[in-house]
Length: 384
Image (cartoon, rainbow, N blue to C red):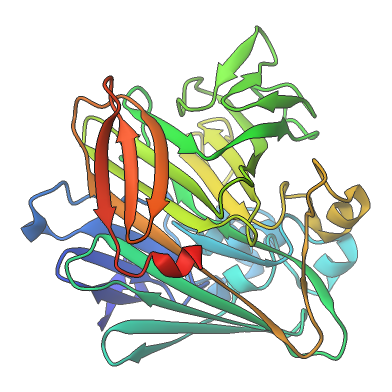
């Protein structure tokens, strides 16, 4: 465990002899997860890195809007990279909230986090959300020799009234791990829906349409296979997938056969029943996207669409499933989830299934449904 710099920003590095994990105090983003060179595998960052020069969001000033976009969006985008936390809402604030200085996806991803190492084995990251009256604590741990990273998180309500909120883990993938023509995406769900707001005139999917994963209704033509990322340059989409409630856990994963790597997340389906998919495929020409950005958000959480708090409340449940969570008055909610990274056969072209069994993540893929097990000695805590 050590303090470091990452692309010019303050950072903390957690290493376990196999993996390096980088977290940023500015916005709390998990910015970089990769194999160490000594492991003998490709050493690329498996999370998405913003192609623009990012800054700690607390440094954002109104003059930076020319670089990052209008302030309520630009402040978030100025620091956004990798895995962000959206709390206590998902999407844009209301006009009245914008007047109070609130920004896209809530206070958490634009605040300064406090980082404290614990016995050089864990990193405790905490942030105060004064507008929402919440306190958030995340503990990151990775045991020696394992290619699994464990996240334990707690949201505390400091007020005397219940707080209904959105809590979304905005994990984002992109090149080199998720790249066109060499990647496959897996999610453990089937019932799905596109959102109603298109994609700024460049949507590839029909608006507000239900479908079964992975074949989504195309704006033109029959369907789009969402397992294949970045298939249509100059287009984008937003959709949501309901996690399969038959399992106690949900899984998302990305396979890249050129690199021979797969990475993903395992999480409790009761805590996070939704996976929101957002794909930007060199569609947005304005700052900071600049017509060069490929990113796919695979955002697991309590809320299906990034429409802000007011609209989420107005829309109510989707597929008979809640779209917000409740943090009781003067109480707390906690969850645990894991990220994994593993080498795979370069012959694989798909992931057909992922199961969590005791201390293993069992991945099946390839033309003959081969089996691969990723060992994580604390995975049982996710199933508990």
